[in-house]
Length: 229
Image 1 (cartoon, rainbow, N blue to C red):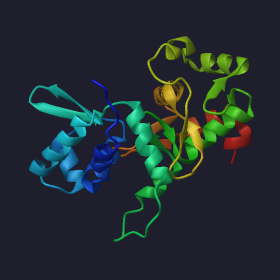
Image 2 (image 1 turned 30 degrees about the vertical axis):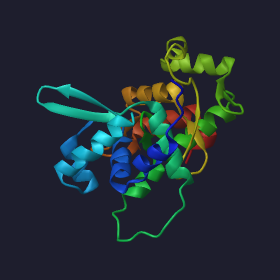
Image 3 (image 1 turned 90 degrees about the vertical axis):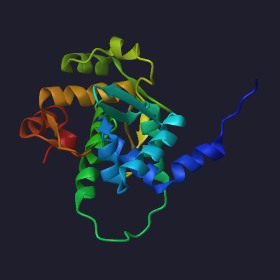
């Protein structure tokens, strides 16, 4: 049977404000329960269940069962990239009510599902390109010979990353900076390694991350023209 993408149905799924809030909550990269998503999106649990079923049917989320609990996460990095792109291209409107100043922290440094975004993500991508470790191409980043040695020295196995079933070093349009940061399998590996090294830390129940004092020193050593001062 011939098939074609159901763009209209997919757009209706994404166009619901509650479902979009849930997807943005899941952009933190961690699995959340249905109750947490209901609370975060401001609806009753029964209502959240119906929204989650719609998201699951359209393969935007995945559900894992552990004991009595069900945990929800984004279905794939491609879904995360779609949400980040929508945040970047959507027109800006005035806030309907005062919001806590969390957005500024997200603008400074955040997780875009599993890689770094915000000013920190843009700064890292720029630094890697300026120092000849990455080369920006039309629709991807390429690792140079110097870059391969640098990533290996940081403890990142490029061969293992290239074997993953996702784009290797994809540019991801940043919704707050409107420029590309480093996504794909390489971007995820770099973020994970910086977390392991203690150069950055995640804020509790937030996509925001912070650069530690040790991380600031190390980033300045590696990229003095970008992170100094």
